[in-house]
Length: 473
Image 1 (cartoon, rainbow, N blue to C red):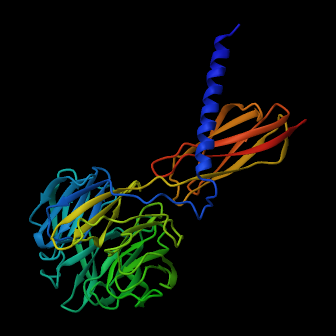
Image 2 (cartoon, helix red, strand yellow; image 1 turned 180 degrees about the vertical axis):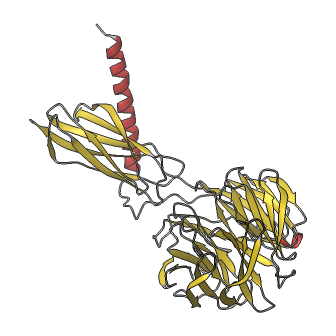
Image 3 (cartoon, one colour; image 1 turned 120 degrees about the vertical axis):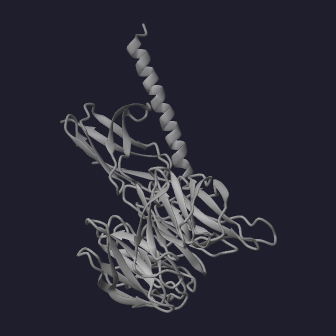
């Protein structure tokens, strides 16, 4: 007689066999891949949207409202699109809109107004300007602020002192009245310096020259409310750095990646002393770099031929996937513009601003992060007494990291030859991919534990198994 329990057991076992079949198929596709060899297939742009702007200098991604802000300095405006590149609004009256800084809560976009000698605050919900702060630097191409960064509870800006020199200033909005302090750091740069920060290291500010000559890079500690110089280097990197186009900090603030047009690859510097700390294998004429909160580096080059954007796991010198933007015709090329890369905060997509040669057309490309091959390793004692705790340990491995909130399912098969099994629980996955699970097997003999990860937006399905000899207690 078949009972309801028998039917439920049969259904559960069918699900187990189905999931195991899927898992084995997925694992077979990844046979021979080591951690360093795991990579995603070459990716393609999901959407490409022409932009109604004639110039570009900076981009900010607002996750709270799924908006992208693009500066149009020579059009005196800020363009707002949704995450597919469709225009939402053009915000006018922003003279020489150049660089951006987005507040931690995504509620306010600060805009450096080079031609107005000021910084504007824009409400990201209403897309209206709510305040404007005079930086006291004057106005025009050789005076007003061009680069912004929020660090150490202040808004920092790079600006020009005159035609040939630039400096760093700060805007403190924490008191009853805004306070502007110019000539911070006691350093001068050739041209208005480019600033970069990372939220996870809020007291580190990095500045670099961007006037087209041999660049200097400087690191500051801003924890005391002033820019205290920590390190400075001229012509950094193993290839040197002429015509710096972009730079970005890793999430921990320990490294800065620089994109110098005169170099042969993207170069990595240690922020503690700006010593060389590695290279990313790209190609001639790097012009953009962006790092997501998990440490994944998007590195772009000005390249009419070959990949335009490559992705690197933090610390890895070789890309695990890339994009090569298609040429619209035999007589035109599509290339990435300087500083034209930005991540969505969740790391699921990359926004790239491109230009078509022979025209003035700028476009926004939305690149969905491909799902990368993932491997699961599981470890357990070779033997263990029954009715006693048995601890499994393991790790998920992939070219890109694992965020918070991931779990793996744990299955136990008491007779591996029969293929029957049951789901016994789940385990949380740490940011480094590790997990642990404790079971108390009751039956003697060979017991197989199978760990399944069902994937996410960035990682493919994966599983791993281990067999334990359960002996008499």
